[in-house]
Picture 1 (cartoon, each protein chain N blue to C red):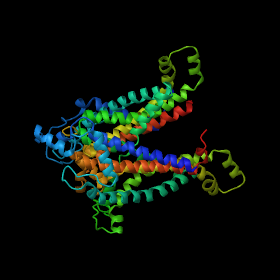
Picture 2: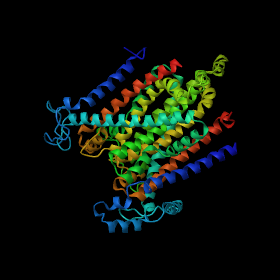
Picture 3: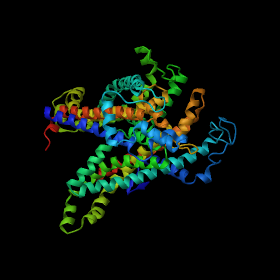
Picture 4: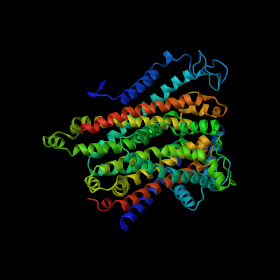
Length: 315
Length: 271
């Protein structure tokens, strides 16, 4: 058991390393000279040569990669190409903002999805099930930013309950943050809840069809006890997987939603940096997002191992 | 109404109708669009009127015409990318399934590597270096998409390869290429069609999200995502223009989903 978990953790570390290679290769070795791109209109041969030297592009890629990774591991992501500021210092408060938003959304979405999914399974074929089914299909089909604008239009502008822009400042208190980032949080919840809920419903229903559930009914247990005590534990493994998958999806959702609500987070920095071709910032953001994604997937697999004994003894 | 010899439920019919309307609009834009895409025809943000059903946009261009041209760009691009990624993904997936352990190992590890990051993050890293060029966009998204299709195609081919009729064909002395073409491919088509619909949706939403972030289609061209970006600032002033392109994206995605749900359900019945 411990051995399997350790093996999975080691695989996660390997994947993270591979992702770092990919990010570095994506920004350094591909065609399209970075120095040329940064200088754009001022790209005389002398300027380009000077810039290449300054960026270290005249040294071998492997050497630069090792140096970059070594610094990144110590929390040093170099300096921004646009304003020469220290990337790590610039991004730290933004990372906190993004984590705050993502955790806020996850804490609301996951319990809600589980409860709604189990309810939909328990009331299969009844009105609640049909409404939930239609609503989740709608939520899956709408692009994130459309949901964001719908909320802005109706909740922020029409009802006036929450501000349109989630412009949290470093000095904003905890409850101020909860209030300001409520609409971004709600958009993210709507984006991820649908899939989690459908999956919960489907896996509970799949278990409900098995003979031991019929046995539980036949010995006279009330329906809620059969669903919660007999069906749910066995349906848990696929549910954990889909929850982690959707939390990983939060990473993508967060980028778009931050832009919609002008929320000062990591996603917005990354979008800005990409359009300005500020490579060190893009690398840093990419690495952080990839690390979060890989960690979530790893945790999901380990939790699935713990919750489902059958996975521990592969045939 | 029937399709593939099966009765279509109402939901699937609505989905099919939405898809057909969008395709027709994308094909016949020059005929039906009331104004050219980029022509300024009046005052900026004029409301809807008999001449301009959806009003005018930030530069005084007809929103309805731009929506129709946007349909052509969004749908055409998504179809192109999905076709490219399907060719790569299905070819690679089948190869991994039939060429033996070593090929499977190599191809699967490459795909795992590309899947180690969210597609949006990876695409943004590539776009930051290569610039937001249309070709770069098409190649990047096709490759990223192909990884997902690879997984599906590989699993399908492995399932089919284990069946008796493939074994019979092999014992009869048929070549590998013949088996892939005559035994595996025809039996993989129905699930792959459903997958094509889902992948198309994903690509379509992905491009519109990139355009919304300002990293996809660049002006003067506009797809629905970049229209959402251009019109979004005005929502504070109560101009509803942003809801036309966003609604168009939503409608097409829902339509395809309804159609695909049905396709998936008849596939499972057949097995």
